[in-house]
Image 1 (cartoon, rainbow, N blue to C red):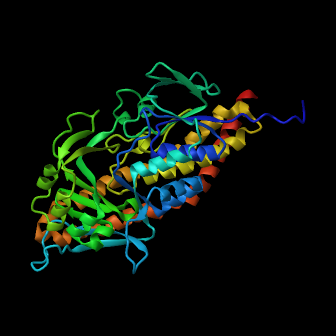
Image 2 (image 1 turned 60 degrees about the horizontal axis):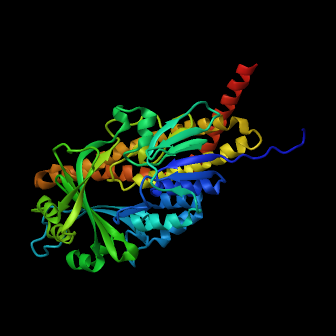
Image 3 (image 1 turned 30 degrees about the vertical axis):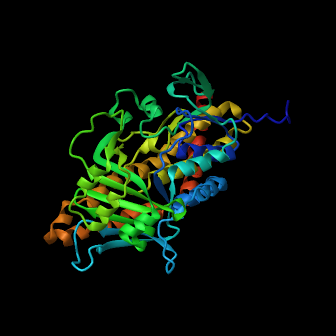
Length: 459
């Protein structure tokens, strides 16, 4: 009857993957009154206890998505990656990790370049502690564990999607967003089994990472270096570290070039020993060798994979969408992969607000609105995120130039830093408010066109 209010039907979204980006997005969608379900294949939330860092831009995006997310990040022991009482700003520092520049001070390392990232420009935390803090702000009943996705069936645009799991169970949702990481099943479903773009590929770099108590790090390399981020660069390898866990530890990661193929694409982690790291950095500066000696005796060797060789030609199809590493898995050399995932979550949260407004008085077009929203996400996010994948490969090549070992080529090698600065600033100074505005305008334009086409076909 005229004048009766249309009952609002909530949008139901399934998120595949309960990692950090999946939970950030889930919190954002809950805040937009979306009915969210997160399906995680593991038995419980789990992240290795190594560190990660977020840019100031990413933390501002967290706050826009949901202030509780930023609160969770800060409560997880986040700490600025620079800690200098005379200067409140954060910096990225590249120092010569290979050559000995002083006979009098064996611990001296030449500072090659430094970029000002601003106040709290980078904050580091332990992955497991941040994930644990995020889990605490997720409403009860949102996450289901031991749910490994097997397939997604779509019968029509306005019908719900049917997800099937390997345990024989199934579930329905209006839309599915894949946040299931670098080995994404949703990506394989979207792009096709056997398609090379459905899978990540080996970058010929391996990573050894571990946590070192701050007091031991200070003893090895001095207080200033230990309490502030430094990237020790040299031929065919580099080692980066920064403080985490409220400044009680440093997260140290050594990246080493591997000319061979990785033996098993399905298993990206292999057991290793500290000796392997010490051999890789044999002949480097004493500071780097001391840090290597403080890593655990037994540790993992991580094969670094990414989506550089065969990037996804699109991030969505209908009401299925990819986000975070599932869409644009990057090598970690910019330290910005998770930051891009947070930007994705802000874009998707903005879009779900628009979909809710579109369908409030017309729930019959929910499927159309969701498809348009994911088309918009692809249009707004794909170029920037795939640029990061390319740029991360590029800066690693610059960090690991063989010229660092050849004194006549030192001047040539050092010309790389202007390029590194430009690439870094493109990440740090991203205008997330402009992205939100573009997202709203692009969604509105596409939705108007879709409705016009529908009305035209009816007429």
